[in-house]
Length: 171
Ligand code: AMP
Image 1: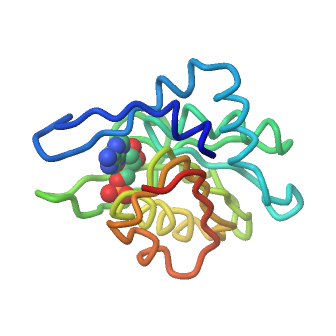
Image 2: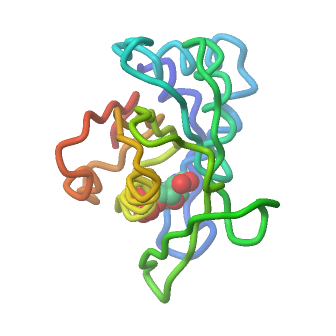
Image 3: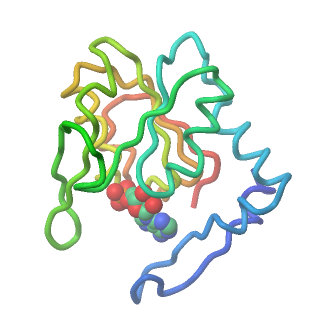
C-alpha cells in the first residue's frame, strides 16, 4: 500500500483554500499502480457475496467497472442529477454549504441484490451514506464499501453503520 500512497499526488488548497486534494490520476496512469489498486479493491471480497458493483460519479467510475469485471459482475452507475435517461430514484444529502442530489435508475438494482459500493475517497462519509440509502430504497442490500483512500480524521466510517468497509490507504 506504500506503493499506492507514493503514487497519489497531494495538491494543497484545491479546489479551495484549506483542502488537501488527493489526486489519483498519477496513480492511475502508472501501470503497476493501476494493477495494485484494482487488485486491492477486490481483495477480501468474495464474488459469491456480491451481485452487482456500484460506482459513484465521477471518480468512482474510474474503478468500479473494472472491479465488477474482475469479479464477474455487472456495473451500476450512481450519477449527478439529470444525467440518467430513464426513471430515477434520488437521494439528497448535506454538503458543507447546502445540499446535493444523487440519482440511480429505478431498475438498476433488484430487491435483495447485494451491492458493493466503490468510490475513490471516503471523506466525511456523506456521499457514501447517501448512496447506501439509495441502494436500500430500491430494496438492495449493501454488501460493503471499497475505497482507494480514507481520510481517517473525518470519521466518515462512523456514518456507514457497521457495513464492511475496506480502504487501501489511510491519511
Ligand atoms: P464525502 O461525502 O465527504 O465522504 O466526500 C466524498 C467525495 O468527495 C468523494 O467522492 C471524493 O471524490 C471527494 N473528496 C472529498 N475530499 C477529498 C479530498 N481531500 N481529495 C480528493 N477527493 C475528495
